[in-house]
Amino acid sequence: MRAEVAPRLGLHAGRAHEGRAGGGDVTFAIDEHAERFMEQFLAERAPEVAFYSEDRGMVAPSGQSAEWVLLVDPVDGTRPALAGLESCCVAVAAAHLDNEPTMADVEVGCVVEIKSGAEFFCERGGQIQPAAHLSATTEVERMFWTYGLRGRPTRLLMGVLEELVDASSVGGASFDLGSAAFDMTRIGTGQLDAYVEPGPRIVEEVPGAREEFERVGGGGILNNSPYDIAAAALYLQEAGAIVTDAHGVSLDERPLLGSTPEYQCSCIAAANTELHTAICRSVEDGLAKLLL
Image (cartoon, rainbow, N blue to C red; front, side, top):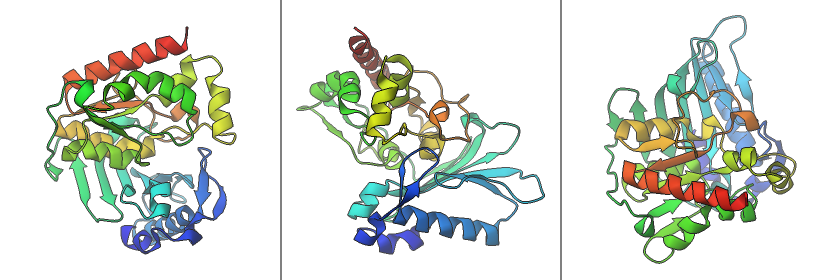
């Protein structure tokens, strides 16, 4: 997939709109090209395997029951890819397809950076590649961290993240890099200390937030779906980092196969427990202010 997409990075032709994905995001031409390639590749190489992707949704083998399902985001970070930037990845997670799988059923994860070719691979309970280098930073004032703004109403998102952005503005740094998989794997490399995405919790708890998300999202609610974070979350968990939702609760029970709002996942990932606790406390304060 990386070899197929890499020559198209930065090409303006890839910016053409091809429609809307199941979760409501714009399907750009580069996305549709990647999805077609993936569908054909799996049909030829692994027709017995089911897959779930951003634009195709759930695709199961014809006339048989699949044992495995692949969650595939062929281009995680479409907009960075269209701009020719580094923060775009292929993200794939594999889970046993028993009943309704959850995040806890993910057994294998792989993230490959499209521009550089750097690879991150993990197996549940097994080794990870490459070895992680987690930050020892415990203070939000010194953390380097990232969040996602695409499709989120700025006033509401920054209402929750304001304290974190301001606190880290001088002694640390905050970024919107455009790809959840890239953001989260940066925690494993030690380049970043945390990733914070409270969007689904804002939609659930703040009056009028759903309508604001739909306004900015062109009618859709655009937060992370499981295919965005499943591979990177397993990598970080196996590396010893802390990955939860925006309540500080494990993602293990979250349903795996879906992209509509009820399937979308908030996420707080941090290199260590102390930093994660501090971030969760700040997110709670931010939400409380929105609810005043």
